[in-house]
Length: 111
Length: 120
Image 1 (cartoon, each protein chain N blue to C red):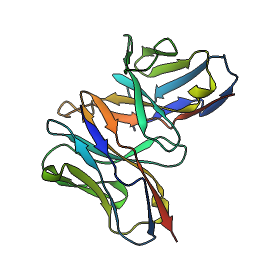
Image 2: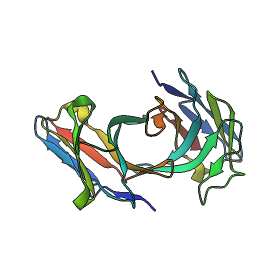
Image 3: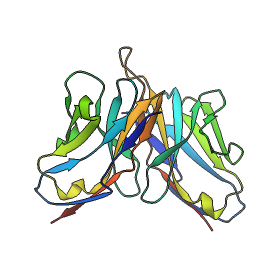
Image 4: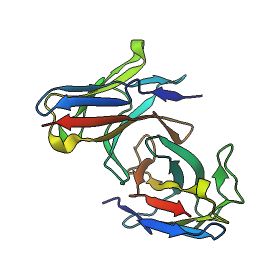
């Protein structure tokens, strides 16, 4: 069965600093991978997704992610974070028509 | 486009009562709707998958008699928490999916804003 691990429960970065959120997945076939963001008390917004092709995918709000099959990873990056990026971030893998989510990483931004 | 709404956004009820949560796809017809449960500071756990006009498929460990799901139309699914107890307090999120185009690889899911249920 597919699974997703986000090793970092909570990350704090300063505004303007770069960001990398880690995601490792386990899936037997070629994975469909996603990153979602959840603001407090709200549903999920899709940041980006990977199905195939170029392993570096661009998303909304200046985020990008790189798929590395050899490392079973799909890390999310942003070169310069903004205070509005403070939220919970979830990595997910799709298998058998349903999404499996990681535990989430809470991002705090220091002014 | 592809907006999903939930109603109510929050609800407080007494133990033993039933609560109904609605999930609507506002500008598209959803072939499938999903219900998730999220505990504080935790991930989303899929509870069930429902297709319009057919019975929901529940995930292992989810009580189908406790969490009744009805998907009566292509734009509406409801989750009823029957005889709610404090341990049912949680954040419930629905999503709706459809195929964006004939060439799309899969049916993308769009998430509602969630419903906060508190059972006293």
